Amino acid sequence: MADNTLFSRIPLRQTWRRVRLARRFITPRILKRLLPTSLFGRSLLIILLPIVIMQAAVTWAFFEAHWRIVTGQLSEALAGDIAWDVSLYQRDPSPMAMAALADQAERDQSLSIVFLPGANLPTGGRRSLLPAFDQALRSAVDDHLPEPFFIDSVRYPAYIDIRVKVKDGVLRIIAPRDRAFAARGHIFILWLTGATLALTAVAILFIRNQVRAIERLAQAAEAFGKGEDQKFKPHGAREVRQAGRAFLDMKVRLQRHIDQRTVLLASVSHDLRTPLTRLKLEAALAPPSPRVEAIKQDLAEMEHMIDEYLAFARGQGGEAVEVVDLGSMIKSVSRGAAQVGANIEVQASEDLEASLRPNAFRRALSNLIMNAAAHGRQVAVAARARSGGGVEITVDDDGPGIPPDRYEEAFRPFSRLDEARNQNVKGVGLGLAIARDVARGHGGDVTLDRSPLGGLRAVVRLPA
Image (cartoon, rainbow, N blue to C red; front, side):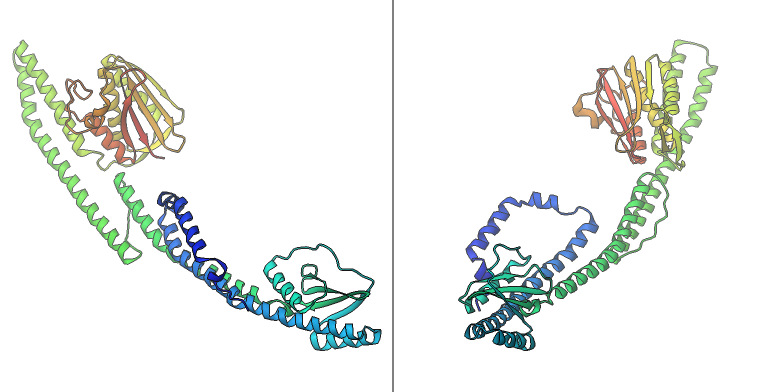
C-alpha cells in the first residue's frame, strides 16, 4: 500500500506557500472584523474552535488511516474473487460450468454472477459521491483483470454492478457494497457530529449564564448613569460578583458625594439668602436714587447666580421619570423665552413622547432656548423621532456663534468664553453645562454645530 500520510499527498513547500498566501490576504484587521464582537460569541468561539479542529483532525485521521486503508484492502479482496471467477469461466464457458460457478460464487463469495451473451460493456455512467473509493476499486480490478470491465456503484444503494468483457458476451457480477467499501464509516461521523452538538449545547448553556450576569451588571450601571435606582444583586462567576460588589461600592460613594455637594451648596444658598433678603429690604426702603437702582440690579444678579449654583449642584435630584409630551413642553418653554424679544419658531412632531424627568429636562431646554434667544433674533426649535430610535431636538439661532474649536470648552462649568455664547449679562457659565449634564443623565448628550441660520446649533439626542 502507498503511504497515505499528509506529507506524501501535499508537498511541504506547497503547504508553506499556501500558508504565506493566506497570511497575505487575511490581515489582522480583516480577521478582527470576521471575529464576533460579543463576549458570548467570543467565549463560544474559544470553546468550539478547538473542538471543531480536533474533530476535523480525528475525522481526517480516521478516513486516511482507517477507512481508506480498509476500503483498499476490501477492494483488493473483491478484485481477487472476481479475477478468480472470470478465470474459471474462461477455462470452461459451458452452461453447466457457468451454473456451478454461479452457485459457488453465491454460496462462498456472496457474489451474483450471470452471463449476458452477445452483450457489450456500457458506456458512460454516473459519478459516485466518493470518487476516491471508486478509484480504489477500479485500480484493484485493473491490477487483477486484463480484460475490459465496467463498474457502477451508484445505481443500486447496497450493491455494486461490475461487468467484465469475455468471449461472446459479458459477465455481470453483482457484489454487496460492504465487500468493497467500509460501510460503517458514516456511523463514526454521526457519533462525532452528535458529540459536537452535545458539547455545543452545554457550552451555550453555561456561557449564557455567565454572560447574563455581566449583562445585568451593565444594565445596572446604565440605569445608575441615568439616575434610576435599579436593584442589583451580584451573581455569576467569582470575578463577575467581585465586579458587581465594586460597582455597588462605587455607586454608594458617588451617591454620597452627590448628596454632600447638594447639601453643601443648598446650605450655602440658604445662608446667603438671609443677608441677601435683608439687603433687598433695605434697598426697597431706601429713598429712590440711581445708586439704589444699581444696588437692586446687583442684588437681582446675585440671586440669579445663587439659583444657578444650586440648580447645577442639585442636578436631577430624586425626580421620578415620567412619560412627557415633548411638543407641549417645547412650546411652553419657547413661549417663556419669546419674552426676551426673539422670534421663536417651533416645529415638533405630533405625539412625540419620551420618558424624562420633567423639571430637570425643562431646565435644560430653557437654558438652551434662552441662550439662543439672548444671542439671536431668529430662533428655530425642532423635535423629531430618530430613525434608529430615540428623539432629537435642535435649537438654531442667527447669532454670532462660537468657533468650532471651542465647542467643548463652552460646556465646561463656569466657562465664560470671550465673544461666545455663555457670556451673557446674568449668566455664570452654567447653562450649557447644566443642559449637557441633564441630557447625559437621561442617557443622551448635547452637541454644538454650525446652524443653517448662521449662528449656533445645539443638538439634544435622547435614547429610545
